[in-house]
Amino acid sequence: MDEKQTEDTKIEVEGIPFLISTDSLKYLPQKLYVDYNPTLGYKLSSDEETFKYNLRLTRRENK
Image 1 (cartoon, rainbow, N blue to C red):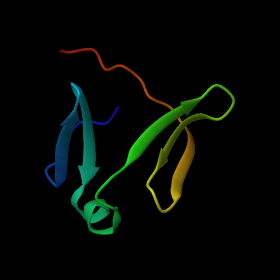
Image 2: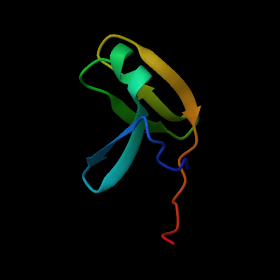
Image 3: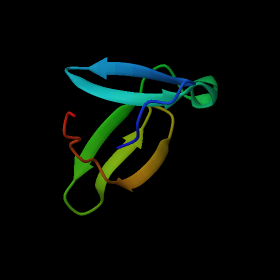
């Protein structure tokens, strides 16, 4: 998990925080999906395309 950088936007969905860089926001569609497949791992996609397979999500311990 990354730490929030100055240029990042924090979006929380159903209690799960996501950090997205300002540069990335310019190119991403309005809706993104995080799906899980036991064989392929987590997948980041939109209605138009798949951005990344085999993502690793970890729980960050609060300090």
